[in-house]
Length: 79
Image (cartoon, rainbow, N blue to C red; front, side, top):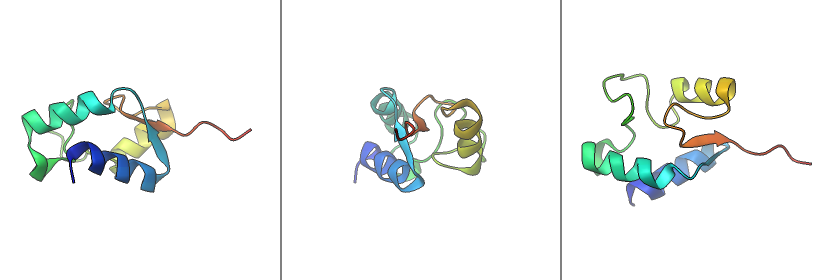
């Protein structure tokens, strides 16, 4: 499974959606960390509490509507 596929899967499982930044973030993760550490945050890579769909990431999304990397966001409200 590629980094982008992992990101999309975890995002959907958490009940969020991705932004147009998802592919860019996946490429950055691959260049910086490789597939082994795909969850690490390329925007805050030294913070072990911030990674894809971590509690810190979820708090950002719930508070700001989008995560720190501007990769994951809330699903649009159902009408």
